[in-house]
Image (cartoon, rainbow, N blue to C red; front, side):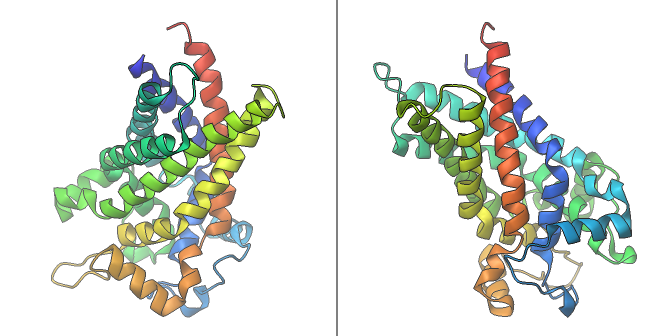
Length: 298
């Protein structure tokens, strides 16, 4: 029963991750705008609705294929991170659900999400790091690009050139973000779904699944965006031998970002974040509900 939760969550996560990858790539590029390595003209209001323009420029300068840069890392990341967090959340949900009422209280949903997210992020950090770097590579001058050919090449080169420990660079922020995303996304989905069914607004069908998942996606985007910006910048920073790293850590990155670009810089990329988080969460849970129906007799 427990293993089935991992399988169901993994399949749904891979489908959702691949289908929304271009939006995620645009989000990463926007979150990196305004860093000292970028030109001053790259500074933009954090909540500006610019993802379409950014996407168009990527296609114009790098080709349509660039929108899927790092998709192999996305597949590996979803396989490791999301499969783990979805499976653990399902196990805790079964364990902590009241057998008489079939309801798990919201505080327990949140606790389950925090635990599942932390473990999943620790497992998936190397793939997450590779994905961020591969997505961001196209914004660098040609001479500075890493030009990873695949997620395997990225992880192998990072291990060889920067040490095995580099694969967990930014892991503290990854874990924190994953805890927030998983707790807000999975817990709020279950809560919204239960509320809709209890109030008799809709039955347990596609309409309820889409409504609950989009609401959950919005909550997750609002909660996680600041941590996501810092995580992206720490993971993407280039550390040259013999030179100090641009950021000493997550806190240093946060302080430097706010000082240089203002507090709203922590919401850079919010429009593509919600544009991605909404569809991702909808595809994730709609697919999950269908996969559960297919696997219910296993």
